[in-house]
Every structure is written in structure tokens, then in C-alpha cells.
Image 1 (cartoon, helix red, strand yellow):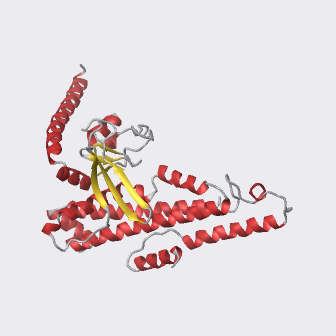
Image 2 (cartoon, rainbow, N blue to C red):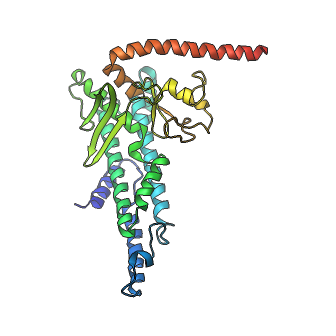
Image 3 (cartoon, rainbow, N blue to C red):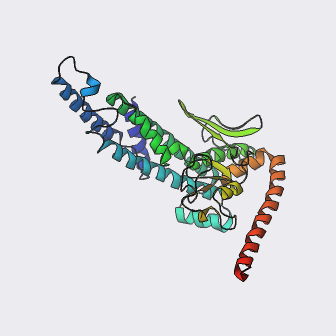
Length: 331
């Protein structure tokens, strides 16, 4: 079965119960087909010794047929897909980590069956949704490059990553991977635990941790869990909107804010310490599942780091309030 048909059948099945955004493969292929016809009809009138790459309607830099419809349409669809994935993943993980009255309120509001199996099934659906849409985007961009004899499709993929609409780069995918490993480690307490996705592990290479996962075919994720500021395993990790992960205190230092004010107080012009992208702190995601996973996997390190972190936080808080008092009395 061709991927386009398989994709449409999957999305139709999902949309019976949920209105989920999708990549419009059929529509985008029609745009490319129209572009190819225009391309071929143009070449019919050309002399036989003409260079097809130089005289065709399309070039490596622009295409009058596609630029006004193909990329804007794909950009809109990618934004809607990743927005839906992020929202659903956040809701699922909040439900998993919540307890007591707060969990009851979330269940009542969302009307989700709150048992373990239902949570895992929701996670499976989310991962499948992310993978199949990522493959759909990859295939349509590859087709664009094939028709246009260009690398504009690959360039657009890089642009999507910089705009934070590449679904596999979402911090919530990292959280779902940690969620899966945490559930797997708790399997002894719940024999009915289901696999979220195979081939997902926390590995240590020369003491440096990373999350690795083979999702589907050639789709593989490797997430480095070493903070590039303190050069140690991330502690109380946060993911900036650019996708880079840091310790919370290190991220605050990078954003030039105190832990009292937090990352939300960061100036929009502050840059990621690693990629130097601006405006990445306001939408930072606290990786709670990853924090639980690392605390279980590195208990000795975590205990030592927790003690030093408490001392550091107290010192920073004390310095902040002392400076506020001095400013208040005009010293």
C-alpha cells in the first residue's frame, strides 16, 4: 500500500473520534502535479538542445507555481499538527503526574478515563500521530525536490526546525520518551503495562547520558542530556523553544534572570547559550518526566546534586532579596 493511502486511512480513522489536523498530502500532490504539467508544457516549445534546468518554469531558488501555494499551505498544516501534538502531550503528562484533588479536576474537565492502560494508549496514539505526520512531511518535501531539481525542500525542513514546527524536535516528544521508560520500569508494579514504543532507552556513554529511540523505519531520535553550560548531567531540566535542554539554574543564568523571577521574566532578546537564537525562554518547558527518570537512574549523583543545588538556590535567593532591600532603602 502506498504511503499516501495508508496515511489518509490512518487520519480518517483518528478523526472519527477526534478532530485532528493533518498534512494535506493529496492537495499538496495536486499542486506539484500542476507544477509538473506546467513545467513539461513549457519545455515542449523549447529547442531540443535547450537546458531543462535553465529554461524550465521551476528553478532551485523559486517556482512561480508553487511558491504562492505549496509552502504556505504546508507551513500552516505543520503548525497546526505540532500545536495539536504539544497540547495533547502536555495534557496527558499533566494527568499522569498530578495527584489527589487536582487529578480529579483534570479528569472531570477532560473526561478521560483515568486508569493506567488508558494513559498508555493515549501515549501510543500521540507517538503514532507524531511519527506518521513527520514521515508525511518528509516525503512531500522530498517529492518537491525531485520535481524541481532542487534542495528547497530540505531547506524548508531546516526552516521549520528554526520555527519550532518540526514535530520530532518538540520537547514533548522527549517527555513522552521519558514517560515510556518510567512506565516500563514500573512494570513490576503493574503487570498490564503496555509498550509505548520499542527501542527507547536511556544510555550512558562514558558517563554522559542521552535518550535514544528508534521510532519507525529510518526515523531515529538521539537527545543529549548533558547541560552545555555546567557540562554535567542536566538537573531539574528545562527545554527552551529551540529544543536545547539545560539545568534550570543554568538556563536562568543564561537568560540573565534570577531563580526568584524565573525564565518567564527573561528579555525577549536573550539568546540560547548554544544556538544563539533569540526569544527562546518564554515558552520553556519543564521536563518533569525526564527529571523523574534521571533521579531514578543516577541516585547517587542526584542526591549529591540535590544538596549542592539547595545551597546554590538559597545563596541566589539571599543575594536577590538583599539587593532588593538595598534598592528599597536607597543604599
